[in-house]
Amino acid sequence: MIKVTFIEPTGNTRILETPPSGDMMHLALANGVAGILGECGGTCGCGTCQVHLDEQTLKRIPPAADDEADMLSLSDYLTPASRLACQIKLTPELDGVIAKVPEVQG
Image (cartoon, rainbow, N blue to C red):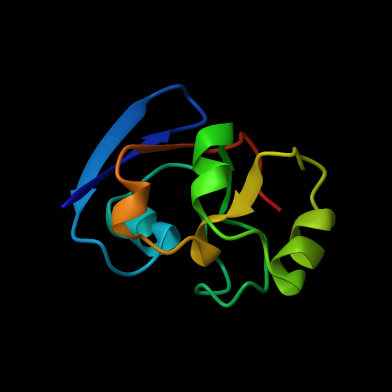
């Protein structure tokens, strides 16, 4: 099991434990994490599952692919820590990850 912490836009903290499989967006949606919309169903086509990750976590995952980077570039809330949760695979290396959900998606 790996532990994933979501900080919702309200500041509420949600700590979830899951087997290392799937992606961060589907985990958030299945557990009702506020602020994660996932309107495209995880196809990297909408930008409504943006999260902000800490620097250490960003070093543990592959960089954003071109399609993810293109989608993120459309966001008014883009930061160097922005990633799309649908593109973050839940692997054992992500145990302890903290993902902050921005107040507005898209």
